[in-house]
Length: 546
Image (tube, rainbow, N blue to C red; front, side, top):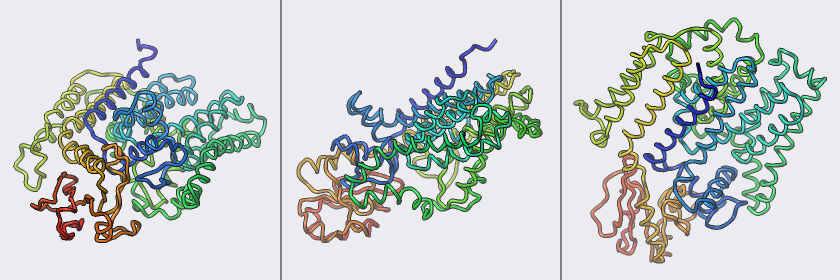
């Protein structure tokens, strides 16, 4: 007999393990995570909660919700480094609970689908990894699920409660990442006449215009929440900032997106690896095949298809593509896979688990063996990695192959535990490399020491605020030799005789008394020069190391 609340207990435990190991064994990764920490730090330092700043300048690339939440945690727990990387994962946990609640509305007579859906979601490689990362898209995913849960509440139960959820979720989504939340929730809400096979909308609202009227009211309510921040921020931030938040980071970003440009088929090419281990589980494919004939015949499946496909197609047409853009629609795939597995009434066997479990067993053994193989062209750091931790993944995979798990539910749980174990052991195996190459606390503290004694600090190249939070810097770092800085190296050093300059070299640091600190970073070296000891030879400050 299956315990009543086994699913929430299981996915909460697995989430806690994943996040705990990620926080403990992975430093804040430049440039994105350290940049978001810098914005939150400057908000805390300056007390300006309306207009975010980065390195002393207004930061218009993202709305403030993530930074507000980081500051709220500091206000409660004090300044610390463990709270900020916990904020986005907490939204990931909320997504799992919302996934279960949505499935209960989609399939009210099939509670097991609701229990399976968050387990399947957490077991997908894409979600397992990104649930530990500080990304705005996880906030958007939670807001998307809450908004669509509101749509389902309005569909099943009528009344106004669902539309309150819908409007509040849109408002928070706008504060999380801007109007992109509308792209995530509107297609499936507007396509209700296609997926509402039971005709519940007409029963609850009398006419479709009432349904669409409530959608408009929900959008307006969400817009009011977003504008409650954006209007004062636009006033206080100035014209350039106002133009950026009202246009540059919304429609302008979509129309003129050339960053991360990839071909239209790129998402189709990567969707398989993102769905591991489910994409290579024969039982999943057999279940999908058995369900093909009835897939379009029920409202719940139509809802999931019309949620996933239009947005996937829209993002494929936009030139700028990143994996995490797909996070908000990924639960739709978990719903469909859970429905296929449960309603196909299939059993599983050792042979059925051979491919996914065998894949991770072989992968784990390869990773364990890599430092000991006579391979050329491997980076030096591979030799000191504790890859033996991947042996835990191998053991769990072998257990799944040996254990006689007859039910699909047991196999889903086992494969999700396997995926979680893989991600945890991956963190353990890569921890020395991650801390050696990406942990910039020592360099950041060195910069702080120079600033505290009155020296000016500059960075040659584009500066992303990498050292602001890690070193608790209270002054900006000047950019040099960039199109937006307005300063050449010679001019700035001449005007700031008591200064240090940080540059990133691709070759070894020179043996020179002006070198005050060297930090390995991504195959190169951050080098901190004391300009007073350069004796007028500023050629060493060239960021290419010439």
